[in-house]
Amino acid sequence: MRKVALAGFGLTKFSKEDGSIDSLMLSATKSLFGNMPNLSQKDVDVVLTSTNDDHKYLASIVSELSGIAPKISHSVESLCNSGANSAISAFSYIASGLADVALVVGAERFDSPGLVLEWDKSRGQYKHPIFWSSIFTKAHARKYGTTKEDLAIVSAKNHKNALDNPYAYFEKTYSVDEIMNSRNLTDDIRLLDCSLPCSGSAAILLASEEAARNLTDSPIWISGIGQRTISAGFTKNYELTSMKSTIDAASMAYEMAKKEPDDIDVAEIHDAFSVCEIIEVEDLGFVKKGLGKEFVRTLYETQDKKINPRGGLIGAGHPLGATGIAQIAEIGQQLQGKAGKRQVSGAKTGLVQNMSAAATSSSVLILQS
Amino acid sequence: MTPFEEELKKGKFVCGECQNCKKLVWPPSNYCNRCFKQVTWRSVSQTAKLIEFSKKDDVIFCIAEFENEIRVMGSLQTDTKPVIGQDLKLIKCSYNGNEEFVFQPK
Image 1 (cartoon, each protein chain N blue to C red):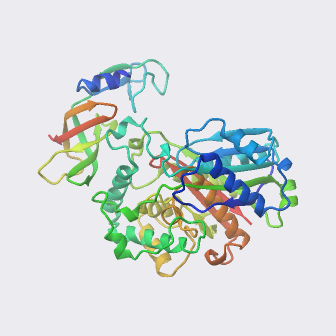
Image 2 (cartoon, rainbow over the protein chains, first blue to last red):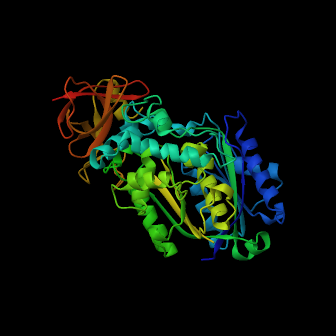
Image 3 (spheres, rainbow over the protein chains, first blue to last red):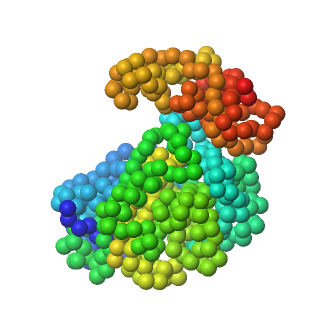
């Protein structure tokens, strides 16, 4: 298998913009080309688009709009982890030798059809994500004593981190009290415990080792990949205080990269709701099960940006198809030492965890400088 | 509409069972997800076990487990504090483009 590098990225400001999905994707692509003066359209032989938008022939349209005539072009949809899925597909094309340079671009509109999975009959009349997240939150609180304040700390931390991310939707901080006193959506979650669906796009360029050397002075290597889908039905999560798909995906990624959780210097993880970050730091092995809330509280109190330095989904906003790609772009910048005020000092190894549909599917990537 | 939806519309909760694998196939499908043989639709027990719950406005919503096997989200009508593991009775189910399940303590 050939080595695959993250060679560049392009981002746009997350917003409530009412633009078309192809124009959003073109914006991120334009930004990527702007960041990569050595890149020419003829270098790109794969174009993958990631979105839940109902749009035909999108990868070919984005290729056309960008002046690229790729060998391979298609769309990837997997609800909230469409982004990581598309990056993994691009990785595979390059690792196998089928292609050398892949543009992966994700975007979503604020009114995405990907917010609700109608197919899942087991959710009854409770198909909106606030219901599964309430159940996870209640179960975690019951087993580990997770409090409303513990949840609010996740949101306070991630909004604070997002303040240094010029592409984040949110541009203000919230106190723990403000978050705890924000509107109760259910008995277990408040409005500011939730990520916000918004419009936005993100692009990354993956390349073979040889191609990457011509495109960037500081390639970041994708050294580990893991992915697991346990079901498409929320109620198949038999253990409601863990994400089985994330545990499995992380295990595969660590093994492939020959890394341990302690080796991870910085991570972007899928905080669709506050409780997700607490569960994920446990399931990714950063801390023992049940101690996630203390781990996150310490990060907040010491202003440690190790987890979700760009603000995560809660601080940066959640344009579904763009999220996984924006997470990868952030870890790339961190490992290049170019994350500005968000920089985690000396970061050499990073992790991305992107998941979908009530944690029924998860993807984990490990990147190294 | 699938038999699941057709029956639910009539107020009856049915699930496909594979006669070959002796298992319920859930979420509902016409074919077994182990052997791909066609399922036989049958009534599901009216009794379920409370797995977890939360509340939105004044409505309790929950996960309930039927026959130690299949789990469904629905609303729970009760005057007493729900207890995890307690037996519930399915008092109503319906389908009008969206599935609805309503439980009460047994």
